Length: 368
Ligand code: ATP
Ligand code: MG
Image 1: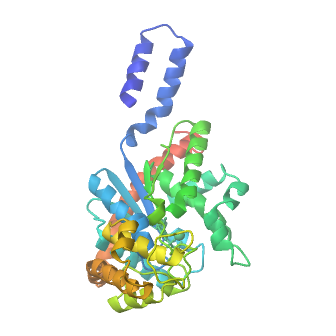
Image 2 (image 1 turned 120 degrees about the vertical axis):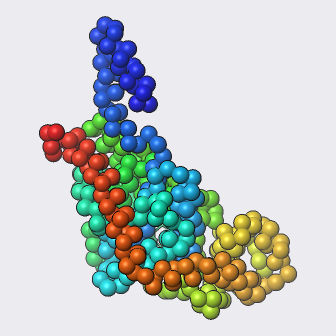
Image 3 (image 1 turned 30 degrees about the vertical axis):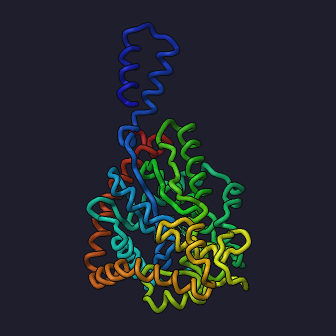
């Protein structure tokens, strides 16, 4: 794109000064920032609000690893600034930052190939958030489903909970990301990022590529709570039996599967609308083995839900064993994890600063 724009500008220099040439020159000027973004750049984040669970793994981290291994820039953030939108114990938060880092590495994120960093160590996230907040409206933020879900039980809603989708947009746009692998619960937030990238570009000239959400099959990729399958599995759910963490011991996995809410029918059928509990277990089984839900139902047609829960527990235990062992080993070396985050944050800061200086010029904060 850059090459053809330069070529067009050169061609224009040899012809009369028509309005078309003026347009081409303006277009070229606006697209100069693209030198850093013409290739694919992947960004995504995860909150240090607890241990990673199956939803995080299948909704996000598994795709992160696949995209990392395809090559190109991959940037993953431990988004601690997002996590304080709900109260956090400082000591627990600090430990969770390391725990999430260890889990990501254990799942296959390679610090040699990807940038892994802690969001609060890169101050430009907050600065760009303010700029983008001035381009959006309160009505637009109030409609976002995650805000509605998380604020539903609160008497007093913190401003941060309302604003965090804008911070999420800043996270993505700061790195001029082109692809954002997320779970299905984040799709509306990605639409806000697309809207804000367009709004900024229209007003100040081309600065941000329009980021694309990379979301798996929504039928199986929104892993539901084991205790209330009308809700998604979440780190911040107060009921720890609602989720299976990647580091859960085999005994805990078995216990959580056995206590998973199902109905009074004993057959193994996949009917997400009518039998959400057992269908969620089948979806989880399918995510681990790659088998289609209908084939799973055929294979286990002669056992009841009680016995089927043991089958699912077994599949999960086997798959998670190496991830749990790698995480435990990494957690025994906090200095190594801190060093990874330090190196990652240095790289992230330098990328973020480039975008931030460009933004400052475009909005009139600096003359250079
Ligand atoms: P919290 O409850 O604190 O919001 P969370 O479990 O929702 O935590 P996040 O850190 O908010 O996790 O999200 C990290 C990534 O995991 C996001 O891309 C999100 O879309 C994905 N994700 C989270 N929960 C699920 C789920 N149940 N199914 C699929 N993807 C999920
Ligand atoms: Mg979440």
